[in-house]
Amino acid sequence: MSWSAELTEALGRDNVITDPARLRTYECDGLTGYRVQPAMVVLPRTADEVAAAVRVCARHGVPFVARGAGTGLSGGALPVADGIVVSLQRLRRIVEVDPVNLRAVVEPGVTNLDISKAAAPYGLYYAPDPSSQQVCTIGGNVAENSGGAHCLKYGFTVNHVLAAEVVLADGTVTRLGGDSAQLPGYDLLGAFIGSEGTLGIVTQVTVRLLAKPAAVRTMVADFATVAGAGDAVTGIVAAGIVPAAVEMLDNLAIQAVAASTESVYTPDTAAALVVELDGPPDDVAEQFDEVQEICRRHGSTKIMLARDAEHRALIWTGRKAAFAAVGRISPNYFVQDGVVPRGRLAEVLGRIAAMADDAGIRVANVFHAGDGNLHPLVLYSEAEGQHDRAERLSTEIAELCVELGGSLSGEHGIGADKACSMPRMFGEDDLATMLRLRSAFDPDGLCNPGKVFPTPRLCGERPGPYRPHPLEEAGVIERL
Image (cartoon, rainbow, N blue to C red; front, top):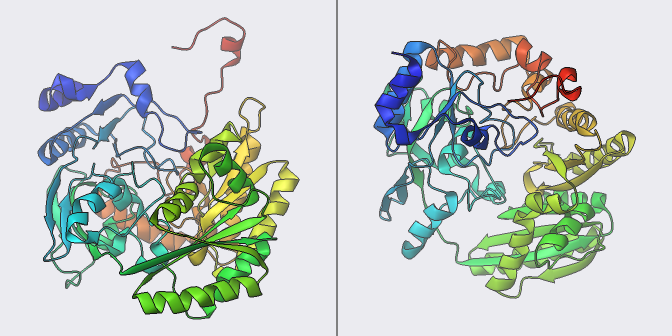
């Protein structure tokens, strides 16, 4: 029996997609510049069905790629042409909310925001909050070790996951971690989180829940220059203040937000900082005044304080809509995800602006300024033939972050997008060690192949937007 027939028998015909038109839905994630159509998509409903699908792949040597909501921005869920996509969208149960032990048990298709909604009646919430938290799923967050606006104070996914049930590359189901955050032995859970789907597929996650803070204060500070806003961020952290969030938007990002949502941001300001403090009311009040003074000292031209919860929500709606809003001012864009030391924010933003001018490409900046996690949006038009130029600029920005003492990625992952830049950050021995760990989990390389590590195929013939063959352009052949 063929592997496709085995998968259909194991999962049922209604849970398998082979129709070419429907397969196109899965040909990319949020990084739409790269597209590959898989041979098949399977839609398991339980962890047992995920394991059954993986066992079929292991027997026949078929590569597989796990996929959640498809909101990833590094090509981490990019399919393999001769392989399958294992969609986890049907595993969306909240198994348990345990307010006594401050944890919840959920399946990988559950969204971040739904965890917080389920915990809200107990005065609890789930801290990691990527901008796409309404749609991004916990399985994808585990794969990428996602963060979000509040990661400056509360950390990333790895800081909030206690345990995970996973299906390994041979179909074995195992559990990593446990009920306690501190366990003896090797930290296999820590290795799995952020491995971008290359070590296995998560089928259940136990997450930490936190008590909602007693007080929250939010402000937006305008600056006449991007450099001034960057210096203010450095000043806030240098003063010993750890805000819940410090976000920055430049003017291009603010214009995009204004074009797509009800915006509270000043349209003509060069840059805006969103600063949020939370904690005990007296501490928050004292530090809030100090943050305002630091912003004024670094050239803030206007400070707007959130009047109430509704006004605060409008501030965050604009910030979290920024990526999607850029679609209003550019038909196509790449999103980068490099990290630099906070003290070099002003320098790196100036360098990015100069690089953009040299390339003749616009770059909008909206990012987690508190921990130096940049999200430059490289704007271009595919129709005007700007894709390759924009892609080069995007790669150069990521590698610039490494040059300045930072990292290729803060939370979006390496995926297919930045795999060829890995040697800029890691030596041969480093990469070889990482590959040994990966091989221990997946010796045959079937689990999300072609991601994270540079390969001749990936770096020589990168997947990308379809380019017609000359015979197709001449009308001799047709694309199927």
